[in-house]
Length: 329
Image (cartoon, rainbow, N blue to C red; front, top):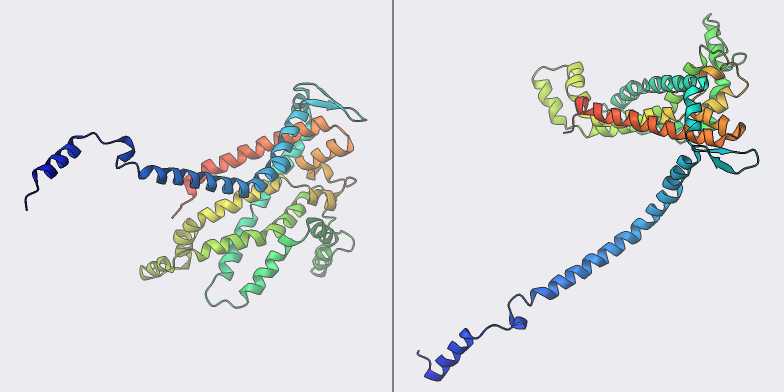
């Protein structure tokens, strides 16, 4: 049907006329963009609201003490309080102090001994993770119990066990004809005794992490390996260990950091009058002596900052080495 001549003219004028800015097709999209912008700001405000408690807590209880410690490491404290800026004198004193070298050696030795707990945790985790094992929850709770026990209580109990006169360990050794020693006052055995307690305290936590890693390994891998004739040992070395390497790496990092910060076991089990203290004094215990006994807080702050740098360097080295042995599925 053909249009009248007047209507055709109006259509031609409408097509030829420029489209007003307010009438462009893109106009309806602008309110949507505005609404999206308001929603983004709204979401951002709620995110900031929920993140604020954690951010404030980290700032007040972690970052600000670190800043204060760094500042105090460049100061000298008087006997009645107050401090003066002395530059790098505390750091020069640290590198000339023979006690720092001995404490650093003891701390690193303790950290290496602490890593021996990883194979123990792995064996316990693999044993409890076997199909058909009964009482897994009870065993897991018993092994995990030292983790939730106060370190001071653990140290007091083990101090009784290691007692050279009436300790249970020497009594058991005496029943089989072996003469025990004063484990915590003998310089040759004191650090080893501390390492045993440290491993016993952390093996439960490491075992739970490794059990979670073992349960995440697909069963099909073991079934395929069995069809190919692989035995339990080959399956453990070729499937379990590679796929469990992220969990092993995680617990190794935590174990090293925890071992480098050891203080409570030395303080409670050894004590400041023990002849084995020089062989068991750690960096954190030396920090305690300098800060709260000698009242040399500037020196102690410098010692704490050096320990922070050492822990950061060792952790960075572990992250660099994990590229060579950790396999992420």
